[in-house]
Length: 209
Image (cartoon, rainbow, N blue to C red; front, side, top):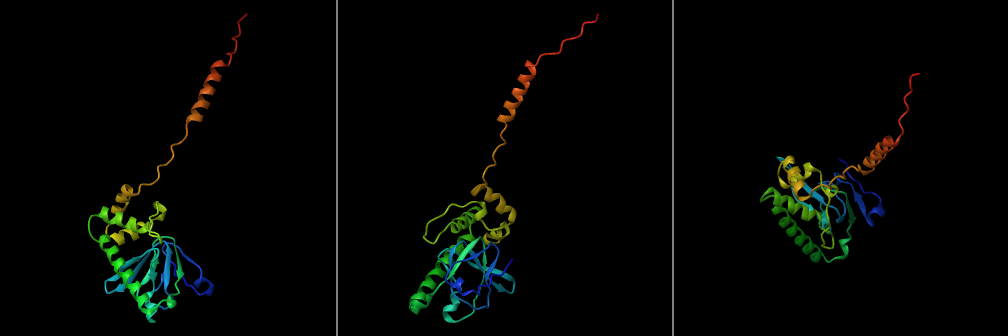
């Protein structure tokens, strides 16, 4: 796990790529408000019982909204998949409009989290797949295995065992079938060899005098 540090001012105006498993925001630190351009993050906080998942940040979501009030970050943001973020200049928005947008986002994130922690394992995993397929434009992208978080992360998010995730993932998002080995050329070659062997003249036997 790597903690990403953004110190270059040019990075604030352009996208910043965050690799899967890297920590982008650290609780109690300060910085800008960030917008998720692609990918997904898990936002955690430390409790007496350990690290607790609060919600997910998906394309179009803001992270570090505490900066609007001049406060340090409340949560630690870790990339679930390869992601990209950009610093958001919300200073141009009226204060009430910005706070209202943040409130609507938090309400939606609460609704997104509920199906991840209730219902059958299949329904929880299917809901997670639908969330990870979401884009900024609201359209759904097609997913493959490389677009998924690590199995341990997935199991933690939907509150189940890693073995269960493996089993249900094979049903909902099967891996691409491996290509069968090509044997036609080999068979044809063998047949040609066999045919040539049959056509080869046999040596004449010497006749004893």
